[in-house]
Image 1 (cartoon, rainbow, N blue to C red):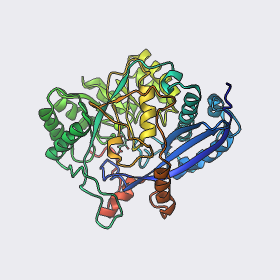
Image 2 (cartoon, rainbow, N blue to C red):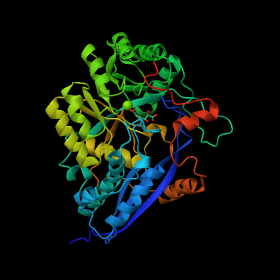
Image 3 (cartoon, helix red, strand yellow):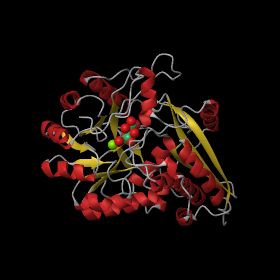
Length: 429
Ligand code: GKR
Ligand code: MG
């Protein structure tokens, strides 16, 4: 039977998802973070799911895209990418993205971040219609599970008093002992065997001590430290020198390709990035200058799963490793990350995921980490199902918000506890 894969409807549902008080260079995560859920419904009743950032600027771009896709087919993905989509330039700028820490926010990155959710939804629909998993549409999997690392954060026990928030049971982590305790909880709950610590929060000596404590508690395990560019070249080299024997890699120790290249030239510790190379246009300079040895892809802003495959091929050609970093996300994105990661031949580092921090999800069944790995689903599409009640509940939260939480702003969230807080100028140390 030939199925009618014409898009009859595209549903865009912005939601607010509970998020614990995780600390980073910008400030602290808001109690609720915006995400956008995209549903592409075909004439024959197949629904494909996608997920991306949910701030207003993404929503504004998603609306015209939804209109454009309606009446076309879910197989018309290239045509969607070729669309001349006007981006409001006032939404972009030369600064590092306020809540995302994903490099400089450009119009193209904004466009690709929205397109990626549509691409994933179209692939999910194609997979469901054909009975094939998304990985098969990308050429097939080369592994049956994908390894993730525990993503450790300095963290308060709870959001500031008086702030409406969901409680969490992770406790505080503000020193080496707290970080190790958090890592133990991650291993007990999800079996992770490699660890990434979000740094750039405390002076480097304190973060060095935390990584040393992790190395003692988990001997021989892969460890990474990611200060999101908070250090000068000199500080980065000092940290690399002190931790060279225990680090798998240092992630964005400093900002920008020239500074990363300087660090890279003076240390044996591999450098990884999700900040200095976040677009295809940034690859040439960074790779030819050997500024990074591992590229951390985020399929949202790289423009989806097919672009992730192209990126993997470029990295392989240059001998640069590929892995994935994450931002606050739910299960649709984790399923998409897992499907594409399953197809990348040279994936030598565990991907990282915020998912364990999200107690809420819009899926009928949460995705499980077993031994720190997610099994690659062979079910049609992404292999996940939407929980409509939960989607409606999280959307109501978004609809009832007065607008303060709809655009992620970690510095504003920090000012609730510390009214004088300003995002520090970089490099901070
Ligand atoms: O969630 O605070 C955070 C992270 O710092 C995130 O915003 C970054 O984009 O995890 C990301 C990273 O690896 O830099
Ligand atoms: Mg990073």
